[in-house]
Amino acid sequence: MKETKINQVKKKLSRYQEVVYRNHCLKWSKNKLNVRFNGLFYRFEQLEEVWKPVTNFQSCPVQLINDPKETYDLCITHLYNQHLKNDGFYLKVTNDNQLTIESANLRGFQYAMEALLESFFSVGDQLLLPELILKHEPSVKIRGIIEGFYGIPWTHEMRLSLFSYMKDNQLNTFMYAPKDDELLRKKWRELYDAQELDKFKELLSAAEASNIDFWYLISPGNDIDITCEEDIQVLLKKLEQLIELGVFQFGLLMDDIDYQLKGAAKRRFREPAFAHAYLVNRVEEYLSTRLSNHELVICPTEYDNRHGSRYLATLSQEIPEQLPFFWTGPSTLAASISTEELQEMASVYQRPMLIWDNIPVNDYLEDKELLFMSPYENRTPNLSKERYQVTGVVSNPMAQLEASKFTINSMANYLWNCERFDPLETWTSVVEKVVGSKLQPAYLTLTNAFPNHYTSSLLSDEELLLAKDPEWVTKEMAALVQAVKWIQQEQHTSRLRTELEPWLQAITESWTFWQEWQLKKDPKEAEEWLAKKKTHRIGRDLVTAHLEQIIKS
Image 1 (cartoon, rainbow, N blue to C red):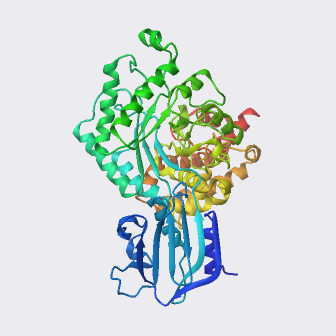
Image 2: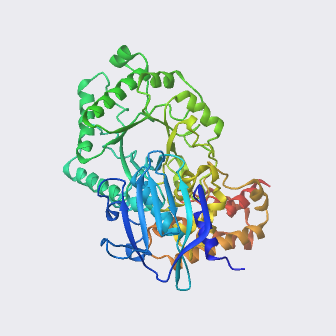
Image 3: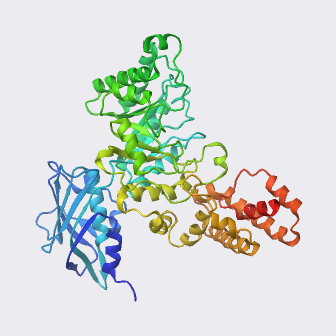
């Protein structure tokens, strides 16, 4: 039986926390509605100023009318509601053609309008809108991406392209912190020249256009002399450059450094936590004098603990309690974050916590030979409980931005409603959103070959047993190669295809070897293949799994 249109709408709206239907639909015999906007969120609020639709105005079923004498089909009233959290909104459609939206910020209004557009459906020449009440509050305040990996940073153009994508996926935060940007880390004392400042200015403008918060995070910890006032003034002057551009959200990173004190610093502070607290307090004091409204996040050197320590206790005691600490989970590349682990670190931090989730980053050792394109999983559904003080989660992606979007999209679904998130149930729609319906089947097969080996095994115990059977390996590899051919045939010029090409070739080479090896099954050739250095590896490598078992036996 074919699914009804109203059930299709209900399925789309199921991602929101509370939806109540009134068993009635508003109906119009037209495909474009005249909408009157009554903006009461702030004085003289105009729809064109507060709503920048993801889709073009022309493709929306609504059009704004400004003439109060003109007949309208739908009246939208926008009200301020201080009790809604985390970009939340309340949407009500009544049978008198009135629609009320309440939000605490303009991003919440944007999300409400997106929910409204998802609610329309057509039957014949009739446009219908269910009478309903819809309320949603995303699980956490900060939902975003941190460019924090080691390796070649993203290009300026890649960052510019990122903001509209983030907006489309209800992400709201971008943190600029590439580890190998020398002006952030090794050469942090050097001020930005005019050309670099222009790039930041362009990034800020693009982020603002998509309603994305832009954070600037600096890492002076390797060699800053905290006892030297000149060094501190250089750091503050560097931050001043960004303040002048309009940045008001900052981070001070003390990660991945040798934090043992020496010389004058040891004589003055005795312990690294006191030294770090002094620097944090100087930066916080400066930002407070320069900005009436700012945010500062701290990455302690011990950022991946699963227990308390003297360093963390002292650091937390010595700096203002409203400043959040980063936590990567119970390890740098956390296989999981359980409720128990979250509860333990909440009791240690005793302050807001921002999770720097190193997923799907692939910068550690030989991980750069792999791609990680799998669901966001093994994270507690209790993240949003207020007692844990989790203010947000940011994903640290791979250098391969486009390939990272599969996991990032999955994470976005989790952060939107973590209590009801099912990584496997939503994966099909995640893949379709990244590549479209035509390529979705091929990419479901391809992404299955590139799991994240931190959150799931590359090959399950079941697959290792099955891999002993060459016929099963042939069947699985043939399906994978068919997916590769379909992608190469249908996706010629996309940035995703360009990123994937070396791994697509690796799959083809593995398949060619496998077919040839099946003719002789020479153990020596198998050993040579296994010993061959591969700069681009298949994660779920069935050929290798089979050959290794042959050699062992």
